[in-house]
Length: 173
Image 1 (spheres, rainbow, N blue to C red):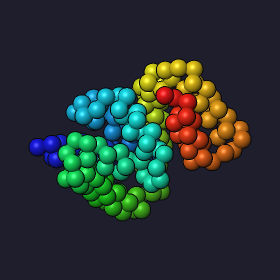
Image 2: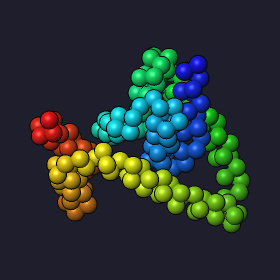
Image 3: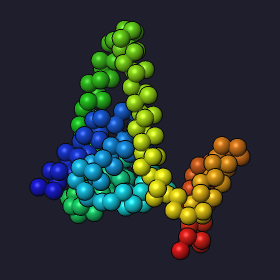
Image 4: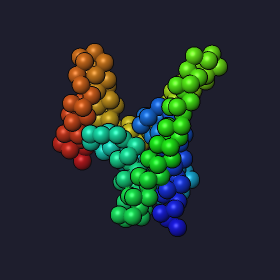
């Protein structure tokens, strides 16, 4: 039963996660934290942080971790299949249809209209994570330094993540 739940939860994420990993993260949170209660918001924040620190697509890493946590090795298979298979089929069909109707104005309007929804989903994710991220002045300092390094010093985000991991290991005990 749990494998079927994992498949369905991540199938919803895979189908509705328009825009890739960043837009899928709030959907994963809704499924894992709110709908099925497989983890708390704090645990989800930890999974998200580790998923961001590792290379590769974040949604698949999160699906793999949550699948393993909830259903063991078969849970990984169920979660990843749920994430990939339905969205792959939908993507192939939509790619074909988009190629046929790309120049139609209402299709262009649909594509433009869904982008703000992705932004709202990301803002809601940030809103949910703020309380668990800024529990002390240290978290605020890491956030401000990270913002400065990425936005103004143009340091690659991967290096900032590695630096934040090292900072957390040394100073956040």
